[in-house]
Image: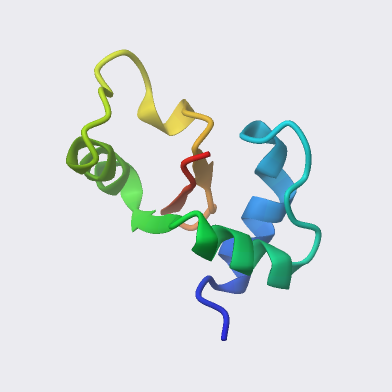
Amino acid sequence: MAKFDKKVLDCFLKDQLQLFPEEVASTPEEADEFLEEMFAVVVKGKRGVRRYFEETGVDISDGNILEASEVFDVGDGRFLIVEG
């Protein structure tokens, strides 16, 4: 059963090259499996992104966290975070 919804999977498939040098998935099923293996998370809003990185101990003081290659804008107020 898919852990991530269609909108999240489509976003990752479309923009995966922002984080990886080559495609890691070509179908929604492959993307779902890959994201689950990578412990990817979906958070709501910029505050959720900031909170995620603060909780994981990543220094986010030097720039716009939403521009990080690990952060994918789903387009509906949610962000997918994939640590490559």
